[in-house]
Length: 376
Image (cartoon, rainbow, N blue to C red; front, side, top):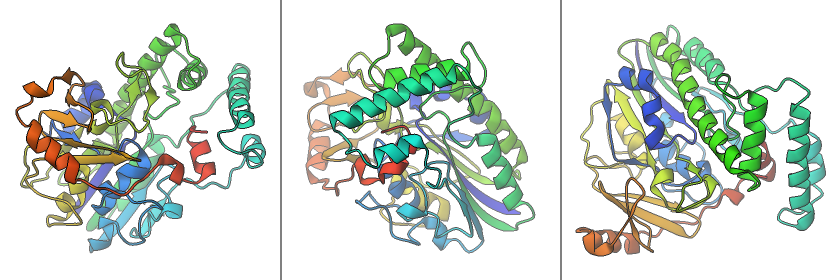
């Protein structure tokens, strides 16, 4: 049996990848300078699955690299923004994604309220407060489909297949950060996450949430061990994150993944097993289809030297040392650096000026899907 598997993790920062030793041990190679093409899921996945930079309105049906594969294909998404409603899944023989049919009280009321208005903000704040109180008096399940369930479904789907291609997207550690074990329970972690994401968290909340985020990553690593043990030894595996996460850094106190061209959001883990390709100093998500298929796909490249990213009106270009976003240079660790100390500043600036992507915003997604993901 010969298989290929792409594993994408939501909101996993490059500098937290060290919390996944079992996954790193399983993978036989890693690339230290890999980049997402956007700061959030709607903009990232056109690059990952279609080899194209994002455009408004999702992707064209059958545009995914899975359509070019001759064997059995299976895709399992746990993110509402990666569903058939946005063009995803049509290239797969078997596909699962969250569906929006579960409309609760919050969604029913909000359908009558204009987003961004005072009434909407008051409603959202009140809903989060209500959830915090309710969580104190009842058992709370996970917000998203758990990784162990996704892994079980994938292994069942590929069992006995001679040629197969799989993709799974896992929502740990997307906010609200809600680990199963550790110093805080799920209720406490969910409530603290909501307060911090809404801008109402204390310093104690912020530290608690950072630790909860890290615990989610550790637990995901333990869960992924079941996947690594269950895959045939010759499976070609690519492991990455769709984007990173902001955790209230001093120079950028935002949380989550807003449209900020920052290394904490754009630099991502990238590891492989049994995969050989002509790798350059930089890898972009837009190259994944080419790597999987072993031939050029979309706008993907082998032996890449620069990567590009976009969100809304913002854009960035990266090489193996620096990120340039039009207003300044940063090292890949996030530190600001004087342009006079950047030997490649001329090349990065020229490439930034030439890069002219279409505009994509998170708000291009459907309202109920954004609500299910906690953005509304």
